[in-house]
Amino acid sequence: MTLWIIISIILAINSMWMLKLNKDLIERNDELIVMIVIKDMQNEEDSHETR
Image (cartoon, rainbow, N blue to C red; front, side):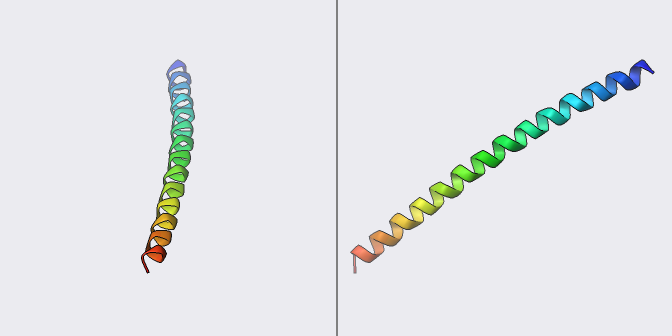
């Protein structure tokens, strides 16, 4: 019985850690998308200026 309680607690902690990690990865992904969009917009402006 005690073993199942310990396993349940470990799984709960692991799930909380995975949710936090997932949230951090989503935020980082959003930052990278914004950087790519900004860089692409700058490249568009540069290509129009050289014409």
